[in-house]
Structures are given as C-alpha cells and as structure tokens.
Length: 273
Image (cartoon, rainbow, N blue to C red; front, top):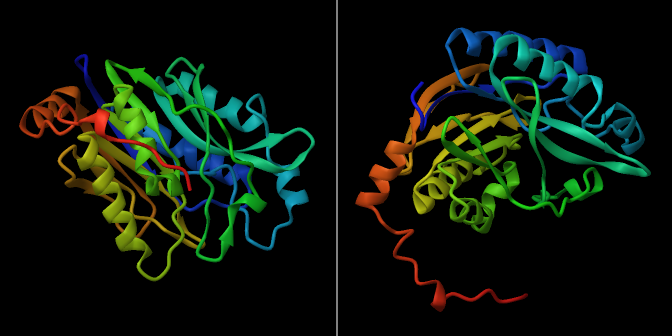
C-alpha cells in the first residue's frame, strides 16, 4: 500500500488455558490476514493463556514466559513466514516475583521485535485487583512506525486514562492500538464504547481495539475513525475485522477539527491528589 496507509486486521478471540491452543489460533488468523494483504494483525491483551481467578500466582508465574521464550519465538516465525507485523499480548515472567508483567509485543514482518510495552495502569476496580496478579510497569508511552503511520499502544483499562492517549498523540500518533480483555458486567459494554470513541475524537486519531471474547470477557472489538465514529466491529463471536486506515484521513479530520492545535497548554496544570 502507499506510504501513509496501512491495512489492519484486528481479532476477537477466546483465550484458552493452553498456550498451544492459542498459538494455533494465531497461526490461523495470521494466515487469514496475510491472504487479505494486511500489514498488521492485532491480538488481544494477555492472549498467551487464559488465567482463571482461582489459578494461583505460583501456577501463573510458571506458565508465563520471557520475551525470548517459545511463545514469542513462534510469533516471530509466523511474522517472518507470512510477511506481516503482529501485536500480541502475553504474560511476561519477572525473575524473583510471582507477579508477571501484562506485556504487549510488537513483531515486524521480518520477525524482529519492534517494541515491547508493559501495562502501567492496572485494573484495581469493580471489586477486582489486577495488582495481585501483575506488576505495574513504569515504562514510557511510546510509538512505532509502520509504512509511514505512527502507532501508539495502551492496554485495556488504560483507556480510562485520557492522559495516555494524549501523550501518544502529542508524540505524533495517527493510530492507537488497544489490546484488551474487557470484563463484561452491568454497563461495561456501554462504557467501553463511550471510552474508545472519546479517545479517538478528542485526539483525532484512529483507535483499533482487539478484545478477548468468552470466559468472562465482553468482546466488542472495534475500529474507530478520527471523528469518533465506529467504522467496523465484530459480532458476539470469535472473528476478525480488516480495515484500511490512512494518515490522509487523520490530516483531513484535523483540518476540519483543529482542536489539537487550539490547545492552550499554558493554562493547563496537573494537580496532585
């Protein structure tokens, strides 16, 4: 595709407790995306394996892997075989700690690791404490480039923090990718749709999400236009959406809605507490 345009496939899948089962799903959908000539395929948050709430920290730590482990190695092989970039959520082991990092790995079409992002804001809400399972990272919010498009990442619960999306946008992001495992519940689906549209519109960027479905998760994998309009989404089943997105569309929206350039940063302050 021409510079400044990419074709993105985003998956909505059920994560199985067995890593090999999830690798098989990645193999199937990466092949499908390659046949559609996609430049990038996105998989959900923590897709390496499903970890039920009753699973102990010891078991989870044993199942988790580092970036050099077999799970990521297989993803790298698939990217190289099919000539497509991939974004995949994993459980990353931490030496000496029963908790793990909630990590997203970006692999380029040559099979090289392009970037690694570890979740910074953990889901300690709605009577759940993700911090008992994961260790919060302090890594920077970062962007990477693909065919002239600048791409940032945030993970699931982080969609509730507008500062992250704004930080990525200020760095030049045209697209924000959000691998997720959004837990279903009263009002949660509506909250999700409101938040992803808001993050797109207030920053005039594309937002592409990839959500787990099944188990305790809500699904709703979606692609949002820089005007905050959902342009593609999945059904209630496993599946994949594929869209073409362009820097030209981002620039067009920003000409019509120049809110980013109208910010008066000298008036804004960040307060503690």
